Length: 227
Image (cartoon, rainbow, N blue to C red; front, top):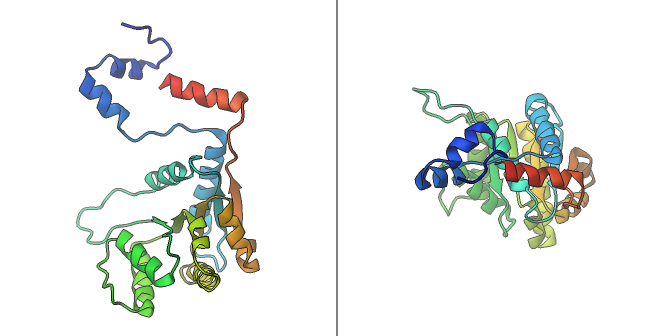
């Protein structure tokens, strides 16, 4: 057998297992942390603990280049804050609601997609007002404590009026639900938010820079090797 001394004891046992066990392990849920990612998780954890219920909850923008780990951070945060299902409870408890921004930034389409994520039946012919009322009702019923919108830079795919309408939606949701909203995306997401001074003051940027050669990159590579 090859030298497995670089692996921890539990991983050596998996490495020595049969093919099926090793493949199942590799395909499982993985998380390899690094300082910037942990700092982002700490800020999001502080937001979900301290911001819900405030009149003007602090919001965040998780910003970084494409394929730089933003979605993995969001998924890690969602998993860490997903409570176990309670027997006898008809409705799910979903403190972290994650929705992806569509390339069509229309408000009605966003509400439809959000309701689909929440598992609610949606009539395609429903009016925007009805979609909004249903989405707000369900978000409150499932105990949403934070709303995360991934790929927020897709907002710029819309026309200028559509962008303004969606920015108004972000402000409305934060005020109505009194929960923090997290937007994740590239630098373009920040440029979109900056067009609204009120939102710019409310959304605090969390920057995930591109990797450069150095000690942190070396430690990250060593973490991959060790697993």
